[in-house]
Image (cartoon, rainbow, N blue to C red; front, side, top):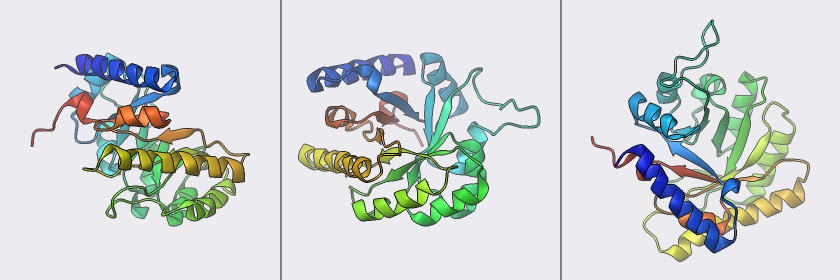
Length: 235
């Protein structure tokens, strides 16, 4: 199946989920998770209409989506513009490069990363706060109080405007636990809106290839799709 055919199938499933939830399709963005994908695959996705890509590793993103050079023209594998977000854990020693590469860092999972990004950017660099709602091995702030502290820090740094929240549902569990994960993010969004109404918390980045229809039903505004779009990776 080509990427264009896979995208058509995904779009049909998103629309059906929107119909069930009484939502409008235009309220949801689709991200192609391009980690480990070749430049040729990324170019094929761009040709199919994808304009938002997600990468897990800073160094890999630098190779596939290089920052502008002296002539301010990135040598990317396709001819037009796109957005690139970091969705993997950011190490402090990669923050300086990350601020040059990404339009948004979705994986702000601890306060020290906020401080590190602030050292290296004049902004604006949009960020999402990651809430831990899944298995113990995954990163993220542990609860709403820690999100509040991170939000207070962000609001004191104009170069890092918050744009919302991100989470990853637990893997290998039933639908009820997946929905509970997504509802926890929605609840945290409401709490942040109430506590910090001056900031933008509108983005809810939740839902991947195995659970994106549930995420749509639970209020996701940004889906991170890899395998369903590109197919299983062959090592």
